[in-house]
Amino acid sequence: MEKLLDRFLRYVAVDTQSNEDSETQPSTDKQLNLLGTLRDELVAMGVEATLDEYGYVMASIPSNIEAKVPAIGFIAHVDTAPDASGADIKPQIINEYDGGEIELKGVPGLALKPSEFPEMLHYVGQTLITTDGTTLLGADDKAGVAEIMNAVQYIVENPGFRHGEIKIGFTPDEEIGRGVVKFDVKRFGADYAYTMDGGEVGELEFENFNAAYAKIHIQGRNVHPGYAKGKMRNAILIGMELNSLFPVEQKPEYTEGYEGFFHLIGINGSVEEADMTYIIRDHDRALFERKKEVILECAGFINRKYGEGTVTPVVKDQYFNMREQVEPHYHVVEKAVKAMEMAGVKPKIQPIRGGTDGANLSFKGLPCPNIFAGGLNFHGKMEYVPLESMEKASEVILNIITLYSEN
Image (tube, rainbow, N blue to C red):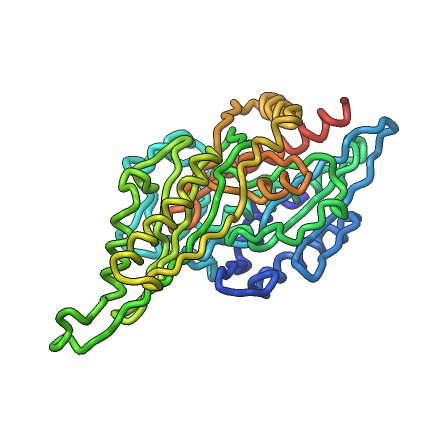
């Protein structure tokens, strides 16, 4: 049986960064390199698996028990975030971490420091996999991919392990919010599922942000600066004015828990015209809807001040809080709690300050909580994952399968 660490390192070596500016599905062809590998590995293990035109790997392991029990799915995404490079990753393996700073050797002077990331001290004595400081690591979500594949290999190699029907899914483009847009829940065939896409060990989530994005175009008027008085309208400065209208305390750096935010993630422009992109988040649906109204109201104020058409906002929903879809099937959460306890892991039920494929899947009729994959500091060069957390996640998968087989 391939070691979990070796499997994970093989997967992170494949560049699978998604591209939010692409209109294709999947958004980048390079994601298909890993997706094709996963399909082939499943088939080589004797598991029926397919890869479709949209980049979805779906696999099925038949039940080996007589009792009729629910079909349970496990899902992870292969793409890495556009925020940092996912190419030429050079992981560092820190055995028996001693609690000190970890030098990221690809960038002189850069280090993971417990003074800045105190949760590192939770993993003293364990094996940490870090970046070298030049790229992200890809534990989001190749840790989840490796954990699922590790569990599949265990099941295949241990025919005495009792289980109902098991469904496996790997998806592209989760990081750009399009992970399951064309995912066929009926074809997948699971009654309930879990995404292995959470953070540190013990995390269990069944509620997430409601999410939208706003793309705002600002039309200015460029005039030679020597003759601009009373004539020039600087689109960049108008954008700054617009941004100042949004509640300052509702920015990501000032919020936590269930608090929502407006987050400016991109600005590009000149005096003549500029474009700004925001993401809008809130757990509370009414507050979420109000935030979208605020965007439109502030745009309207600017248009009244500078003239109609100065600001053109487009606001579009991305996903919604899955709690309302999961809570009627709360046993899926209870099973995950029990599975963690069986693995010696203390469950930490908390809201996701983000989103997962599971949110959209839940609204497609597949209740799908999110379970820890073990990584921390996602989307950047400070990302790392404890090997022991990955091993626990794979054990939790097997425990969930066992619990459903005994139901």
